[in-house]
Amino acid sequence: MALQQHLQQKLLQKLSPQQIQLMKLLQVPTAILDERIKEEMEENPALEQGDDTFEDEYNNDEAENTNEDEYEKDGSQDDYDSIDIAEYVHEGDDEVGDYRLRDTNYPEQDETRVTPHKVEVSFMEIMLQQLGMLTLTEHQRKVAIQIIGSLDDDGYLRREIESIIDDLAFRQNVNTDEEEIADLLVQIQQFDPPGVGARNLQECLLLQLERKEQTTTIKLAIKVLEKYFEEFTKKHYEKIQKAFDLTDENLREIIAQIIKLNPKPGNTGDTGKNRNYIIPDFFIVNNNGKLELSLNSKNAPDLRISDGYRDMLKDYERGSKKDKRQKEAVLFIKQKIDSAKWFIDAIKQRQNTLLNTMEAIMNYQHDFFVTGDETNLRPMILKDIAETTHLDISTVSRVANSKFVQTEFGTFRLKFFFSESLQTDSGEEVSTREVKKILTDLIEEETKKHPYSDEKLTELLQEKGYNIARRTVAKYREQLNIPVARLRKIL
Image (cartoon, rainbow, N blue to C red; front, side, top):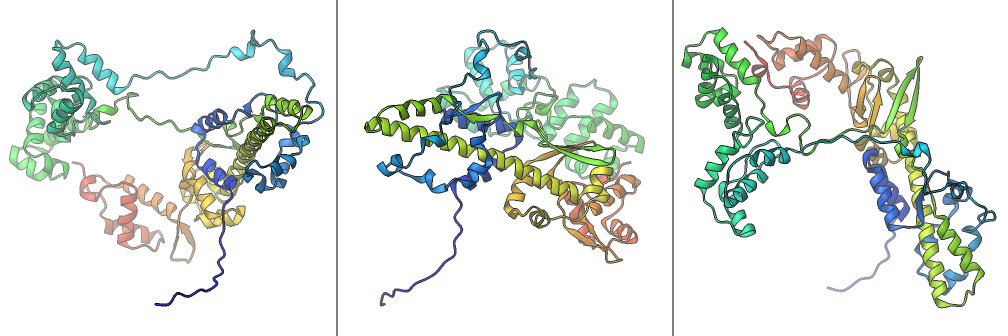
């Protein structure tokens, strides 16, 4: 086979390092933006966070006019000769700044404010505290700690006993067997909250029932879960009633006792391991009918170029420029200052992109932000906002997937406002979010003794003018985490 040469022309779009950095910053939620800025400040000492506003020379206009090629130079003699120190050092830099007139040894009164922090005790700490009350040998304590460490976030022991034995043998040189682990597990299962240490949901519920006062109803509930657990979860109540000769009232009492139990004892109260707190990125306030949008102040950090680095450049400017070490120092300082300016500009672009995107969403879904009624949500896809803001669809997607807005009706992820359209009988396009809201309302209003089937829900929606198929209703119901009619039925 002969080799052939041919020319091929391709059109490629290459993202600059600054564009890549901006894309990454857009994905950073407000809650962890401070951490990202601290990381950058640790890597680049030329970047500072202070009380003063940015200098004019570091505003967006300069960043836009800066040739990106200057960030990719390799530190050659030509690079050094082309440096204009005036870009980094300006008249007036020698003047004493306000911050130098304050005695840093005695902070001002307004700087002594105390920021409260929520103190929590983890699930693991609660379990270890209770373990300390047991009388155990050192060997038993190591095995018990391994068992507790194997509990998942819900408080279950879902690891195989053999795996726990292997972990103890290979990692801690502790030999044990299934019998010892089973004995210690029985003791751990007596800890609070009730149900911890269970190996499955059935055992978890039984452990909780066994801790209650053993009334006739509780004893029957234990028997139901022991012998007819699967039938109970699928709400095959007729079979349970027949097996235990129960009246409707007896069955209702048993069900009432079981549904009070906690299926996830490890997540009780504020002791969950992975408790997440939502910090809104935007705030929308209705001021006498006029919507006002603001950005969380944490998204607008006060960043600036280090005065110390600029002072160093001035010192090098006064000295000889022929020394090799001095040239290397000047190039290093320039690189750090350029990198700091680059990051500051990326943060500002992030702010502008966030505000432009949210403003477009607010205007598009104006009726919802005024009324809070989900049926007022208009069909809206990423392309609609991208065209309004002149941003790329991927950029809008990054903002929508990771940001939250706080309104008088609650806090919502921006992704909540995006939905496909559905056509009504009159030809009008409505949001699928509106259809899901109507579907939820119908299910909430149904008679729970005779819940609506998917076919009936389809008929009701069609009567309201929504042209929808049964399989679509079933899909929306599943997306809303609503079970089928049989599982919604109550006695």
